[in-house]
Length: 400
Image 1 (cartoon, helix red, strand yellow):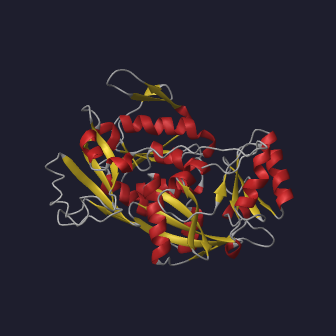
Image 2: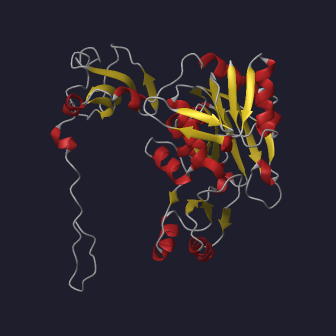
Image 3: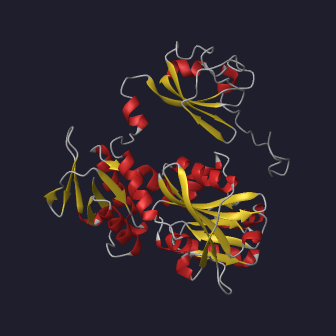
């Protein structure tokens, strides 16, 4: 396998370990500076230039994109994708994970546990937002911060309000997050490769520091994850579209609370804590998958007008409920069920004998018009707009 590692820091621990692991397995490896690429675009022939020369062919690419170059880095990864080169993490997954707000928005709709978070811009909205998540203490996070930089613990509502206003005055976007007191000073990182958690550690802050990042002096210890944490880590990585990821979770009283899904997780902490060859696991996984690169389903399957991929939520009263996939005649209607999600369980390529239940989410490929007919008209109706009524003095009375 000819492997390219995209990194602006060829000598750091993670890049060096990945290169060494690949070379030990007989692969040809090049560390390529992400910022030295140029993307040439013309009809039917996307290409890449590296240091002003046409890039030679590679079998696989392992992106290590720094936060400061996310836009350009994801563009380079996207160009490799258009050239049909296997990439360990795709451009969409990297972009999703880098935006803290976007990543939490995506995770929240899939039933993943996350700390109660709010995002506002108006000055008058700050204090109500703080109170809405339970009041101080709260965590304030810069959207673009990494390695614990831009993470602040505010002990009172007024202090939190002042910090947020100050940051916003400097054009910074900030998240306000409920402080998970029972997990103060510690968190869990699960390292996901493919469809497995290959290692996990607990990070514990030292002294008065509440941030447990290794770069902040946090100590690490290897741990065995229970099913809830392992499942949450795997689902979070998959939902974000990442195949190699570090999933950071707080140990909340109600179970795992995902803080972040990292698309370029460092190897030094996890390998030091667990003693495992995580770099080797990544390379072995890439070797096994390089002959079968994943594709962007939407790009590939929407060529024929009217066809595509859509998620069908089966209403409780649907005629599909109680029938097997085969009995539903979906295939006869030119609809293929790619996966079935029930509660927190995702069943890929479900068997024809699988019975459909109310509330199931079917990821289907087929004709849009036919898939739309599966959902009753009353379910498809747009939510009635909220009408705000006013009292005699002109103040809102809560609406209807």
